[in-house]
Each structure stands twice: as C-alpha cells, then as structure tokens.
Length: 211
Ligand code: B1M
Image 1 (tube, protein in one colour):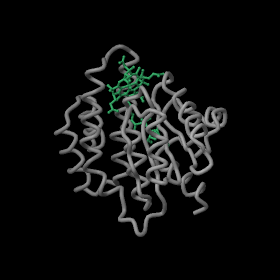
Image 2 (cartoon, helix red, strand yellow):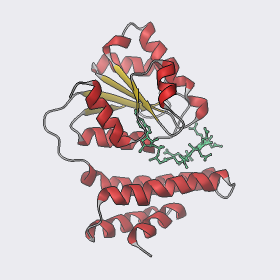
Image 3 (spheres, helix red, strand yellow):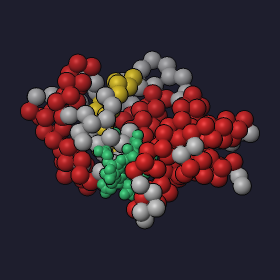
Image 4 (spheres, helix red, strand yellow):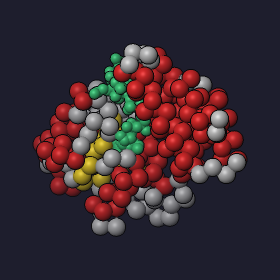
C-alpha cells in the first residue's frame, strides 16, 4: 500500500493519530504536500461522503473522519502556507448560518494566508448580521462565504441582502464556494464570484482586487 493510500484509509477509519503519523512519514519521504492533501485527505472525505449516502457511514463516522482530516491538515499547513510578505488585502471568511461544515472553509483561509492575505475567520454558523459587522469592523476588501448544504445556500443570498441593507455592499467583494455551490448560483444571488476549490479562491480574490 502506498503512503497516500495509507493516509486515505486512516481518514476513513477516523484514526487521527494514524493520519498524523502517515502525513509525517509522507512528508519525510518527500511526497508533495499538495498530493497528500488532494489524493489523501480530500479524496478520503469524498469517499466518506459516498459511504454516508450509501448508509454505510452515519454522522458519528463522518465526524471522526473530519477530525482525523483536520489533524492531518494541521501538520500540512506550514508546508502549504508560504511565508507572506506585506498583507495583500484583508479577507473575512465564514461558513453561513445553519451550516457547521468548516474543513473547506479552513482550507480556503489557509491558502489565502499563504498567498499573503490577512484572513479573519468568523467560524461556522455565522449569521448575516455577524458577517456585516465583521466587514464593517475589519474594513475587509473581500468576504468569502462557504456552504456545504443545499439547505444553507439561501443564507448566502440573505448575507448579500444584509450587506445591501446595511449600505456596505459596494465596499466589499463577495466570493462564494462549497460543494453544492455553482457559478450560476453566484450570479443569481449577486455574488462577485464563485470558486470550485481553495486555490482558485486565491486566484479569484487576486483578480477581484486587481492583483
Ligand atoms: Co455533512 N454533509 N452533514 N458533515 N458532510 C455533506 C456536505 C453531504 C454532501 C454528505 C452526503 O450526503 N453525501 C451532505 C449534504 C447534502 C446536501 O445538502 N445536498 C451532508 C449532510 C446531509 C450533513 C448533515 C445534515 C447530516 C445529518 O445530521 N443528518 C449534517 C449537517 C450539520 C450542519 O452543518 N448543520 C452534517 C454534519 C457533518 C459533520 C459535522 C459530521 C461533518 C463536518 C465536520 C466539519 O466540517 N468540521 C460532515 C462532513 C465531514 C461531511 C462530508 C463527508 C465532507 C465535507 C468535507 O469536509 N469535505 C460531506 C460529503 C462531501 O462533501 N463529499 C458532507 C472536504 C473539503 C476539503 O471539501 O468542504 O467541499 P469542501 O471544500 C472544498 C470546496 O467545496 C471549496 O474548496 C474546498 C477545498 O478545495 N470551498 C470553497 C469550500 N468553501 C469554499 C469557499 C470559497 C471557495 C471555495 O470561497 C469563499
């Protein structure tokens, strides 16, 4: 079994210590951090989702797998995040109201930090009002919203509406992402952009800020 398969399997088992040992061993053996991330950790979470749909995994299994993935991600972070120079801008990120999924959002935050942005992470289950307060208080140039549930996607539209109602919509670019989110949804709700994954979120942020 390859080291990446080993990491993949340990995530499926929800074995956080095993994942950490696998990531350390993989890095020590010279595996690319991006390969460990994509083919090991992210691929395993996709498989967890498939097993959940097939009723082979239930919420507790999803949760321990998520914890195991986060444990591996913590070790990968310094390898994915290059030391930034002067901040390239300020970005607020958060998972929208009603939604507790944070792994994708954490990855986006990590990649943005790596690209030199100052990131303020408001966490999960963030209300539209809290996003508005965050934008105003931190004078953020970009607001990044994440949603993993089809039922919480409407909270993205409500957040944009709250920015409009507070009179600050034109002070901030809004980007959205998450597994069920699409480009056409972004256009429909008046977001400034959508990205499929964490690295394209960085490209999009740079583009929106003319960098
Ligand atoms: Co949940 N869950 N979950 N879950 N969970 C999904 C999302 C699901 C697709 C599983 C399935 O059925 N196959 C399904 C949603 C179905 C739907 O809405 N259509 C689902 C469900 C149903 C639920 C519950 C309702 C289950 C229940 O209670 N009955 C419940 C809801 C709780 C809530 O939020 N209120 C629930 C709970 C949980 C756990 C808490 C157990 C756990 C989350 C733990 C955590 O995040 N700390 C969990 C997990 C782990 C998953 C799966 C298995 C994995 C998600 C993940 O972390 N993926 C997921 C299945 C799946 O996605 N295949 C599933 C890895 C991560 C790196 O990818 O988050 O997609 P992702 O992020 C990517 C991109 O989407 C993008 O970049 C990231 C990196 O490339 N991206 C952005 C994300 N945000 C972005 C923002 C951007 C740009 C890009 O700009 C700002």
